Every structure is written in structure tokens, then in C-alpha cells.
Length: 102
Image 1 (tube, rainbow, N blue to C red):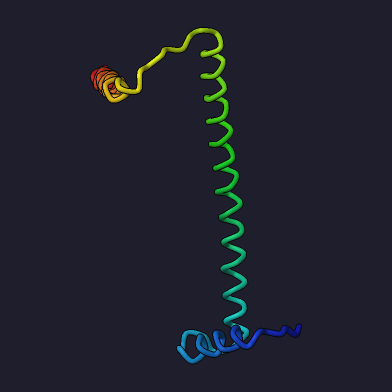
Image 2 (cartoon, rainbow, N blue to C red):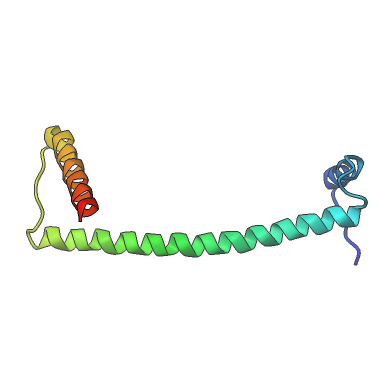
């Protein structure tokens, strides 16, 4: 197999060989291709996981939208938002403590 590199890539390969880490241009190219393959494989897995999380989030948002449409929502004044958030946090902490006690 024959490949052509840009002058910049040729310099990079030479620097890698001169560093002593690689013995030849073939080793540099093989390592680069292996890394690229691992990155693509890992990215594919992460993309699938991210996609599942996005879909779950989308479903939860749509549940909320439906609840609001059905009149199940509550109206909170912007000035009361901090108090409301504190209340939610306190409830969650109480539930966590109760679960830990059982």
C-alpha cells in the first residue's frame, strides 16, 4: 500500500520517529489508525447512550406538557422560584433520609 502525506503530516511523522517512541513511519501510521478506530468505536457507544438519554428526557418533557394541558400544572411567580426550588430540594432530602432509614 502506498500513501501520500502532506508536508505537515510528514514532519509530524518524522518528529514521532525522532522522539524514539516509534521505529518507523509504519508504526506511526498503525498507531494513528488504531487510535482512530478506538475513538470511532467509543464515540459510537457514547452516541447511542446519549441518544437514549435524550429520548428519555424528551418523553419526560412530553409528559409534563400533557400534564400542563390537562390542568395538572402549577403556576409559580418568578419571584418565588428560589423558594419553590428550596422546597423541592428539602422534600427530596427528606425522602432520601426516609429511604435510608427503611
